[in-house]
Every structure is written in structure tokens, then in C-alpha cells.
Image (tube, rainbow, N blue to C red; front, side, top):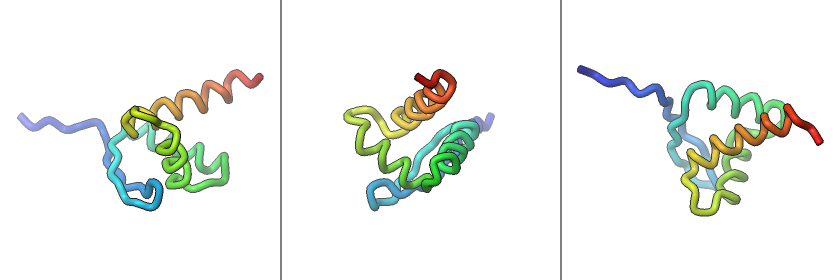
Length: 77
């Protein structure tokens, strides 16, 4: 039996270094949409997430960032 991961691996530049990140396809799409909305590169957004993530894994921090971004957009204050 072969198990195929639903995760997609992409290379991103984070703080000037290349790293691989595995996320669900929908989350990669959400990050691309955010980058377009913010007129920034995916790499810039990932670098910002990396700077503020503390001890959290990068992939977890990216998921949290996406949720918070859309939450904020849905509930502007």
C-alpha cells in the first residue's frame, strides 16, 4: 500500500535562506492570494512569519498566520 501525503512541498526563501515547507494545497493557494492582496512576495510573507514565530514550527506559524489574516478580513474592527 502506498500512502500519498495530501501535503505539497515547496521551497521558500526565509530570511535569505532556502527551506522546504509542506502545507495543504489550499493553504498554498491562500498564501498566494494574501501575497497578491498585499502586493508582496510569498517569500517576504514567509520571512515575516519566521521573524515572529518564536518557538512555533514554521509550518504551524504559517497556518496560524493564514487563519488570522482571513479572520481579520472577515471581522474588520
